[in-house]
Image 1 (spheres, rainbow, N blue to C red):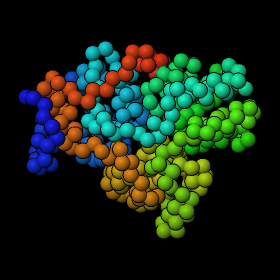
Image 2: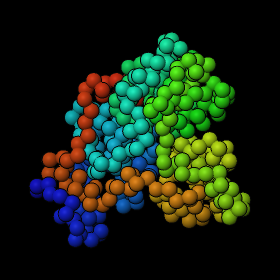
Image 3: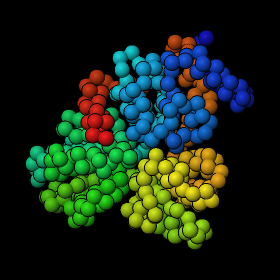
Image 4: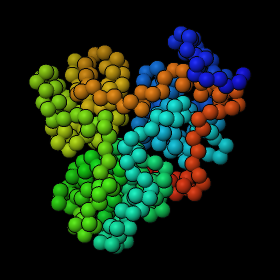
Length: 354
């Protein structure tokens, strides 16, 4: 059947779309794997064969033998799956316009420029580390220079790995994950520098820094404030406050715990029945956790939605699957061979180190 457009599903009730998606999944069987990030809407993640954070999804993308990988997430995630995909595998993203603003805050060319300037004061002892929330060309830059990718689950492990390779780390693109990781490792604040790609400081001002973090951020997580944490404690006496490490440092310090999405889920799982857990991360995950743990109360620190994660809806999933079953996949994500090679090196170093 020929692939059409989203308009075809305008008058379809939800039940019909769900039934058709399940029918296609059954038809494709082991030829299809659907990956879904925790921040996706329920309507899309319900079909995921594997749901996870960036680390788990990277591992799954590297392991699956399915011919078709449908990635419900934002573009850099599907791009990572394409980098790790085996020959003959096809990666499809239902909504290619679903981009990550933070990933777009650093380019490979900007990273290379910063690396060259910092090399003037640090010599060849720099190990670049990029957060998974970055473009393939940034991952390739890191791979070329002996560095690795990290996620919020394994950032400390990768920092420790990097310090075994060299004396200095250039971390991009998230200032807050890099700052929280470095400070929690005991690196003094005066040995932590910030690189503004729009208006870089003179490199000699960073000569004494062991870690330089890129001035990028996640708008979902920088939305949370210390006042939010204090208000939550006043409203829910005895609550547990857990936040994501992409939050500002003062919010992480004020909270009871912090961790990746997987770490946050673990906190909720391990909390006793009757507990109130206040969670500082993307709203769709918080809603889902509250539904999945009815013996506990899971509430948002503040309502903060990732608008690009929220773009993937039922019709997008269905249209992408129809294109696959028709043999005419749409929204195929691909990465040129050289970029993929070096990005794969950076990802492999992460998977080996963690």
